[in-house]
Length: 175
Image (cartoon, rainbow, N blue to C red):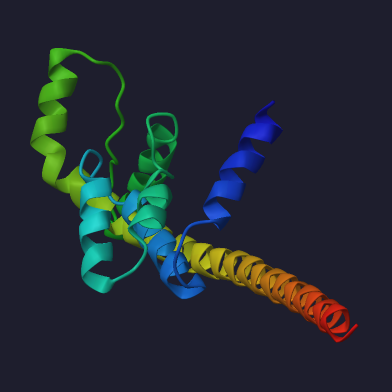
């Protein structure tokens, strides 16, 4: 059941219009933005940037979905961890409970938390985006080449049929 769902999504992904480059760049942009601490505006931000760059807006939105309500805790924890290590934070912030004191601590440390998540997001997002670009480019290029060959073969068969019909008509007229 899950395999069928994934195949259907994959099939729809392959049919997205655009060049492999536009589609791949859009997806890579979405992956990169997905690792940024901008949840809530990621799709809008990604589609806006993709529009300016004339990259695929659809694949940008798909790529952003790397962070969704299920994956966000893991993604943001990891990006914060990476960013806090780079920033050399002695005591990285750890959410222990959801008390009023914890909430006030989060608010006071928000700029540092945001900075660490941004740095971590860039450091994790860039290689992920590059890998995503090349993976999607290869998949889309291969699919579109096969599709072009299929169209050429179909066109060739139709021409052959048309020639046969034309030659049959000439024979009938000549009789």
